[in-house]
Amino acid sequence: MVSAVSETRPLRTEEALTQVGTHVDDLSGVERKLTTTVAMDFGRITIRNDYMLYLFGTPGQERFLFVWDELAMGALGAVVLADTRRLDDCFPAVDYFEKRGQPFIVALNCFDGVSPFTVGEVRSAIGLEPEIPIVRCDARRRDSGREVLITLVEHAMRTGATPVGTMS
Ligand SMILES: Nc1nc2c(ncn2[C@@H]2O[C@H](COP(=O)(O)OP(=O)(O)OP(=O)(O)O)[C@@H](O)[C@H]2O)c(=O)[nH]1
Ligand SMILES: [Mg+2]
Image 1: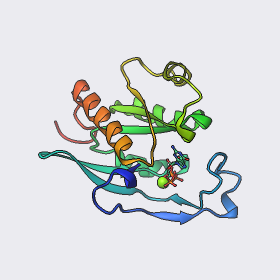
Image 2: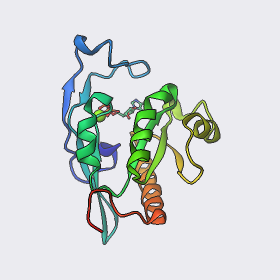
Image 3: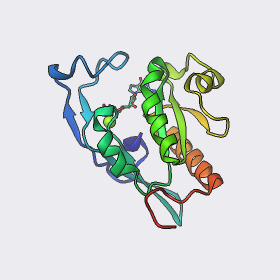
Image 4: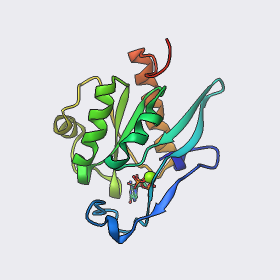
């Protein structure tokens, strides 16, 4: 999503997925995936003339949790990108941002243009509070990613939270 929406050439830190990781990195549904983020993705998007977002994409796997702390520090908020075919993979990310008290939204990445579940079904499966937005998206499309980010910014503004890790 960072790559799709960034108006600058995105920074990516991809490494090849190897045989060693086959039992820990589940590729079901994304069998053609050859690489994985090992540090971060970075990009930028202008929301309005005077409002610029810096985007940091985390590595997906829990074993890289230590990187999440660095990337989440001072963040306005987070997008938890969920694949409805493997919804439980997003639970650790949801728990993480809930525990930090950091504003976040859930974006359902719709493979084949559809989600097999309704937003209500996903909300109850994740146990998400009603005030936390859930939106559908296509992570590869710029306009879709932009909508997701606008939802996040609006949600963060509503919560009025000071970015975690910064002085108020
Ligand atoms: N909607 C949709 N999304 C897709 C499809 N194929 C791949 N994607 C998504 O496009 C994105 C590709 O990003 P990658 O950088 O390859 O993967 P990633 O999610 O960053 O994975 P890690 O870095 O390993 O955590 C991921 O969010 C995929 O889920 C598709 O057919 N439809
Ligand atoms: Mg990645």
